[in-house]
Length: 248
Length: 308
Picture 1: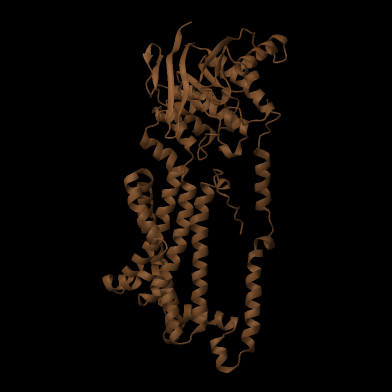
Picture 2 (picture 1 turned 90 degrees about the horizontal axis):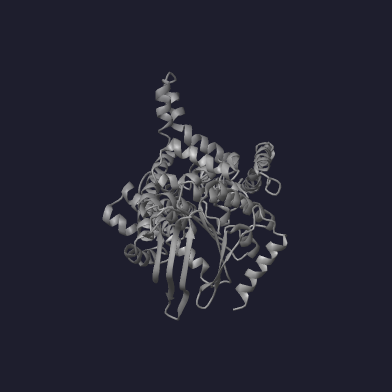
């Protein structure tokens, strides 16, 4: 396997007039090409901060992030799926998926073909011409996944994308995410505080602890897919991660 | 996979069918309060005696007067020359005073509003995008907004004389203020997650503005336009009266006061009301139903669906 992203001695400090927040300290992480990495931890442990740094929303205080051996620039291709519904209401599902392709000046015909391919991938091709407000929450997030992948980004960053959905829909979308990942072989970084979700999805789980935000341990998940969340090994692993998060 | 996420198609189509099939008396329901008021008016007016009757005309007298105001010149011309050509007949119809009053108001007001909409949008965008223009315009607008635009009329008359230009300046100015404020607010309050989504796909600033900020602030912009139009309407009608111009519905109303021509006033008022209603129906509702309502963005603003 090839190292896709290398994070070294990463530090993030937020300075506000009232106080200084030590969000991340000494983060070292190598992510291989095509890996599915889950970031877990309690609130304020810096997992979202790390994701936002990779997305380019937050500046790095110290340390380096390299991708394919080169220092990360702001404008590399990354797909981001947000926790909030971030689809553009004035665009249909297909037009939303086409947005990233428009930015890259892909010709119209090809845009249409690619966007329908990706809507098919998330099983929404019949809803291509629906506006987001006519879609359910789960469908909207599926369109968001298609939108984030349609322009063939280097990595996919997902920030608790299914956190606002009901349990049943969330399970469906987790299975769908694994399916999409296996078909596209994208490197995925996935932030969640749902530990069962992390064990179900990830090749590795990066466990963060707060004050200052740092990596406690990286847990390898070797369970075969599709994973059974009621299997004893699954639950054992989930308990292990739970212990790591709470007792330190 | 499909079970818990039933496609919402059939439901929404059902709803549409129901709307189409609503019977005629349901659609005409908004008219009945007017009928009640007119009936009360009629009964009250019929009690008026002699000269009082001129000051409080019955509904049928008003309707007759309206007919006379519209067709008067035509019928007089026909009485003189029964073989009048069709073109001349239309020409004579165009000479009726109420029509001239209406036409004058009808071009001046949308024209002023159009200017205000363009200038207001440009200023609002400048304020929303550049801190310099924001700090320049916000204090100005905050001071100017509470002043009724009508109060500027004497100054504008002195500067630009009596005529259309005075009415246009006051109307456009009155309308510009709320539009600029609304566009500014709209641009500033676009949902930040849309902007981050566009940024994450490497859209540059100009593209984000064009493809995200503008459509994203459309609900606020449209509601600003609505307030702007309402203010234009009020200021325009007032300015017509105070700027001393000859043609225009409210100029006509103030003229009619001299002759105690109540029926004329009522007809002109009716046209003014109809005007606002038509502008709402032909200008705002089609734009809204094709954009923000179709996109489901009005629910977020707490708007009720307008079926009336």
